Image (cartoon, rainbow, N blue to C red; front, side, top):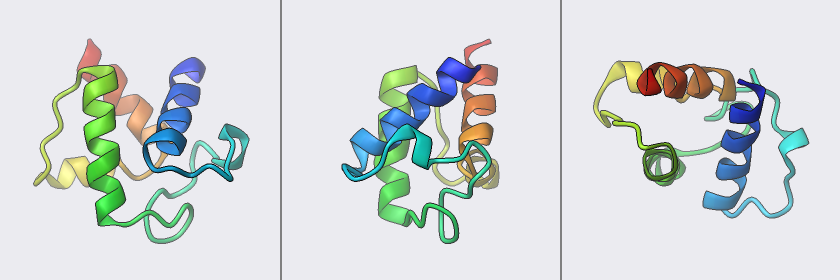
Length: 85
């Protein structure tokens, strides 16, 4: 799971062009949107597409569950693990 979290952090940085950040700058339980990392809805779309492409998981854009999955690196990792099994 730790390797997956590092991959997610690298994907966040590369897909959203956060060149001044490193994986160490993103805490596993830090909020990704509004507070915390401060991502917005456009970032969510880009990140969702990148996750779908890299990890081959289906993401329902209009689901309340999807919002919960994108809350933090931890929740994204759990979602990807569940979707893969």
